[in-house]
Image (tube, rainbow, N blue to C red):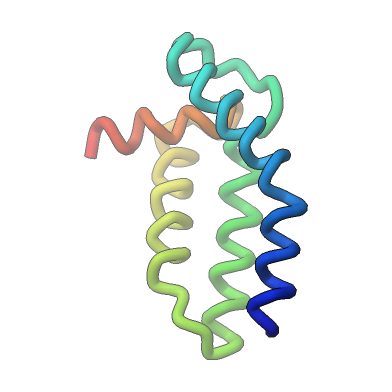
Length: 94
C-alpha cells in the first residue's frame, strides 16, 4: 500500500475516531458504562476475528492478539453488555 493512500485514509476517518474516543473517555470519567455507542461484546468478537485473519495471513498479530485477549477477559468478567470503555475495568485490575 502506498503510504500516501494510507495517510489519506487515516485523514478521512480521524474525525470520527476522535469523537468516538472523546465519548469513551467521557463514559470512563462518568463511571456509567451503560451501552450508548459501542458494546464491548461487538468489539471483542470483531477483534478476535481480525486477529485470526492476521495470523492466517502471516501478518504479525502480537499486539492485536493482546488487545483481543484483554477484550476476552472483559467479556469473561461480565462486561460484555457494557460500553467498550468498560475495558478500563480490566486494565485497572491488571
